Structure formats: structure tokens, C-alpha cells
Image (tube, rainbow, N blue to C red; front, side, top):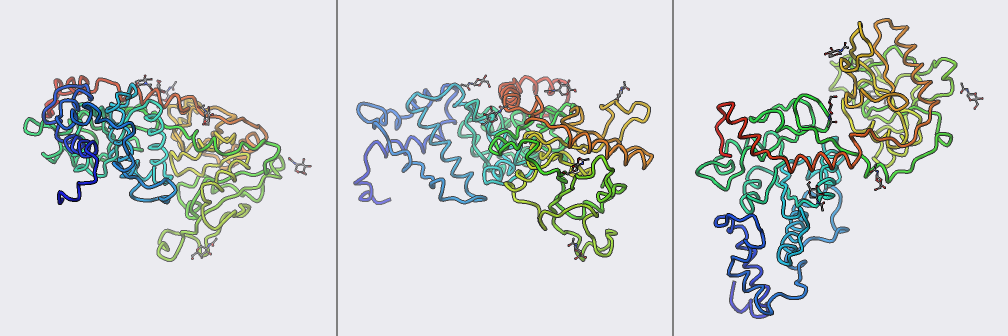
Length: 463
Ligand SMILES: *[C@@H]1O[C@H](CO)[C@@H](O)[C@H](O)[C@H]1NC(C)=O
Ligand SMILES: *[C@@H]1O[C@H](CO)[C@@H](O)[C@H](O)[C@H]1NC(C)=O
Ligand SMILES: *[C@@H]1O[C@H](CO)[C@@H](O)[C@H](O)[C@H]1NC(C)=O
Ligand SMILES: *[C@@H]1O[C@H](CO)[C@@H](O)[C@H](O)[C@H]1NC(C)=O
Ligand SMILES: *[C@@H]1O[C@H](CO)[C@@H](O)[C@H](O)[C@H]1NC(C)=O
Ligand SMILES: *[C@@H]1O[C@H](CO)[C@@H](O)[C@H](O)[C@H]1NC(C)=O
């Protein structure tokens, strides 16, 4: 940069930028856990704060430019970069002014697109889970940063290795880091990411790439009771924005949880025995509604679809596509039951329904014939809900006798549509419960736990 171009810049700004530039280098020298002390050891920072240099209100927005919130649009792929800047801005500001909150200098790195897609507005189960975890981190006042791959993780980490408490990552990214001597902590890379600080963020019970240190290093959205660390999530934030519709103001309808027409022709479809157009007299007035995309096109002909696949008779199509989020919530809230078809498994939608005061019918695909009420042995569409009782969740066993199975179905429909419930959230999925588990997770002594694993096994890694 030509000296002339610096003429108009105020000295405190230069000093501050110099301090900032040094920030990523200082971790080479310090052993302290006190962030302000670290900053104060820098010559540039002393100049910045000495005498009259600290301006009343530095132009933080000029230092960390971020677009106005209304400037970016949903699914902006760069939102996470702007959020990183915003979080760095807030962290630097509180350190420089000595106003950091209790947990603000404790850092969590989120190294999974589940998080970056979540803040861009996407709504998969993983994104809903990720959003809820970020809500909990916000509630506890931790600082978090996003990383998109293990190179970014390594770089972000070495800027403040002692401040980073945990890294939540996709399983492949954990292994990418492990394989890269420039990422993983080792005797020759002492500012690398220690294996024990990295956790797999995995929606399903079994990770395709298990964590070398064992099950506790895999985080789960549900209580799988298989040794994974259960964090869970809450749908409260989005759900509480939706109105609760009183039972007597609703349509006498059952909303079918399905996004694709092919679901009705799958061998996992639980209700081929049901004729929705011929309800028994007790359920005469009930209508079944669905909004699915026709995905049974030519390329799928070998899947055994009928000639012209249609929704089963008696189901009213609300749309020829899955509904957009807002309309989906409204349609569910206007219904008296959400009906599961057997899959998709473990979807967050039943929690949305319950939170809107709409019960869920959870098909039980497998049960112990000798002890049908032993729910531990059940395999259901949504095992996260299998211990929930009526009138919240209605379970229909896949009885071997077709007539009995049909009877059980219609009995459950009748009980569900005639029994109003209020908004409901299972205890372990209320925001406070998620926050408590996230707090326990971030604060746990994972280093000691890893040392124990190390002592018992021959896994080689640097603590
Ligand atoms: C998870 O489920 C097990 C078995 O049902 C139970 O003992 C445990 O308390 C649950 N954990 C949480 C955090 O709810
Ligand atoms: C759900 O969110 C709403 C709005 O933020 C809040 O008023 C309510 O207390 C929350 N419910 C629970 C159980 O936390
Ligand atoms: C069906 O609707 C009619 C008219 O609204 C009502 O009279 C009748 O009781 C309803 N039947 C049942 C089984 O709910
Ligand atoms: C779905 O697509 C198939 C193949 O194009 C067609 O035969 C069928 O009529 C369509 N069904 C509906 C409900 O649109
Ligand atoms: C219930 O099922 C579980 C899992 O199959 C089994 O371990 C347990 O012994 C069963 N309990 C009873 C009372 O049958
Ligand atoms: C800081 O974190 C601890 C542990 O997670 C938590 O108990 C505490 O409430 C948090 N403090 C604030 C101010 O949120």
C-alpha cells in the first residue's frame, strides 16, 4: 500500500488493524487462558489502548463489514462468512472493552454444512437440529464460528486453541482432519485440533464413519441409548410463531405425512390394507389430505408402480407439490391428526404437529408378539416418540391379521380426531432441556475422558 493512501487514516485504526492481524499469530506465543492478557502483550494493542488512543466508539462496522440483514436473501451461501465476521467483531469488541459475558470467550466451531445451510434457511431434519443447537449456544452466551472444510477448521482453531472448547463436525470432516498432519494436533503440530475436541454431528444412530474415540464422540438428535451423546433439539422457536387453532375451528381432517407419491407404492407403506374412501361409520366425516410431488415418472418404471399411479382413493390432494413451510404448518394446525405412513423415519414434523396441538399416528412395524406392550422392543416410524402415550401419540401395531390391523387403524383414527390436545412438547425436547444438555456437553471434561480411552486402548493421538 502506498504511504500516501494511509494519510487520512486515524492512528488508532491502524493500530487496531495491526492488533487484529497479530491475533492469528499470538497463539504461537501464549500459554495464558486470559484473553485480554494475551491481547495486552501485543505491542500494537498497547499503542491501541494507551493514553487517549481508545476511541469512544470505534467504527466496528467499517472494520468488520457485513451486509444489512435485508440485503442477503435466503439460501445466500455467504451468510455464514458474514456471521463469522459478526461473531469475531463481537468477540474482539468485548475483549478490548473488558465486557465479555461469562461464556463469550469460550468458542465452539461448527464444521458442518448442516449449520451453514440452517442459517441460510434450509429446513431438513439436520438443519432443524443444527438451528436448535445454535439457539442453545446463544442462550448460554458461547461464541461460535463456522468452518466449511477441515482446512478452514484448522486455520480457525489455531487462532485460539485454548479458547475452543469443542468442534461439531460432519464425520467425514473429522476423518479428513485426522488424516491431515496440518490439521490434527500432534507433537509436530501443537496448535492442531486435538482428536478429543472433535465430535461427529450425525442425525442417524450409526455414523458411517465412527469416531475413533468411541460412541460418546458422536452427537445425536434423539436419545438412541446406544452410547452416543444425546443433544436433541426443539422445534419451539418456529412452532411458537404459528397460531394454535382450537379443535372446534379445525377441519375434520387427517393430514398425511408424505412428500412424494411414490411413498404410497413403497413396500414400507404401512396401510395398503386401508380404503380411505370407506371409513367405518364412527369416522364417516373424516377426510384425508396430502400434498405430494409426483415422482413416479418414466425413469422409475422398474420400481413396480401401477400404470398410472394415483393417490389412494379417498385422499384429497391439497397441492401437486409438498407445501411450502408456512402453508404446511397452517394445514397441519388445521387438522386433527398427522398420519405416518411408516417412513420417512425420525422426521421432525411430528414434533411440529404436537407443538401445534395435533397428535401423531406412529405406525409400529415390529413388536414382540409375546409382549406387545413392551415398547423397548418396538420398531416404529419415529422411535424418538415410541414412549409417548395417547392422546399425543397413537401407536398402531402391525397385526398379522389384516382385519384386526384395519380395525386398530380406524379405532386409533376415531380416538385421535375426537380427543383435543393443547400444544405439546415432549419433556426432553423443550428448549430448556436442550440447553441443559448442550451446556453439559460443552463443559464436560472430554480431555480426561479421552485420556481414559487412550489408557485402555492403543489409539495413538496427542491430547
Ligand atoms: C435416554 O433414555 C434412557 C433409556 O430410556 C434413559 O434412561 C435416559 O434418562 C434418557 N436420557 C435422557 C437425557 O433423556
Ligand atoms: C416457546 O417459545 C415461545 C416464544 O419464544 C416462548 O414464549 C415459550 O416460553 C417457549 N416454550 C418453552 C417450553 O420454552
Ligand atoms: C358427521 O357430520 C354431521 C353433520 O355435520 C353430523 O351430524 C354427524 O354427527 C357427524 N358424524 C360423526 C360420526 O361425527
Ligand atoms: C404421475 O406420473 C405418472 C407418470 O408420468 C402418471 O402416469 C400419473 O398419472 C401421475 N399421477 C398423478 C396423480 O399425477
Ligand atoms: C422388552 O424388550 C427388550 C428389547 O427387546 C428386552 O430386552 C426386554 O427384556 C423386554 N422386557 C420385557 C419385560 O419383556
Ligand atoms: C455459561 O455456561 C454455563 C455452563 O454451560 C452455564 O451454566 C451458565 O448459565 C452460562 N452463563 C450464562 C450467563 O449464560
